[in-house]
Amino acid sequence: MSYGFRKIRKWLEITNEYKQSDFWTNVLKYKAPEHFFDSEASTFVYDFYQDEEYNFIIVEMPGVYEEELTIRLLSKTRLLIKGTITPVFPAEMEVLRERYYGEIDANHSASRSAETHLLQIQLLNGLLHISYPRQVETVAFNKGL
Image 1 (spheres, rainbow, N blue to C red):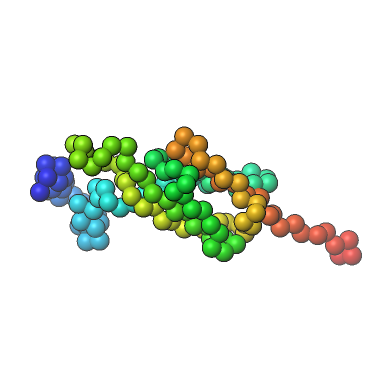
Image 2 (tube, rainbow, N blue to C red):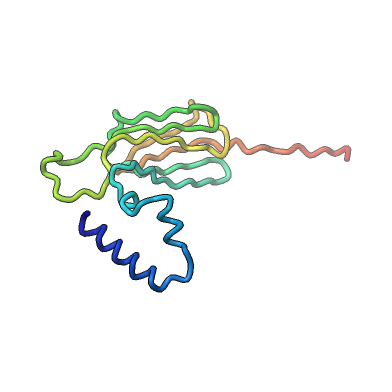
């Protein structure tokens, strides 16, 4: 057991002495403390924005090269983002690693339908920028009512 996990266990023991509920017991039923810090689990961190005309997705993609990136619409409302995060230095030089390296394979559920030819994509400074028109529904006004 690493030093970090021993500290977490000690902290949990101390908090359990003063706990008023079974919060941590319930949390730890579903996930062991080691898994909270699992560096092998890929992370897909993104922000989603909208204005009157466009949807914008900003995805963290540090260490991903454009030629290793695949972006594809699986359906009008499902976007596939796939790539590989490549380490800067070889593994034998590693002393401490907190960042994830390896395959990223994530689906984003688009709130509105999108068309492949309307996707605008740019990878800049480790951020993937995706934008596409909103296709807002308009309701016709019926004068006869």
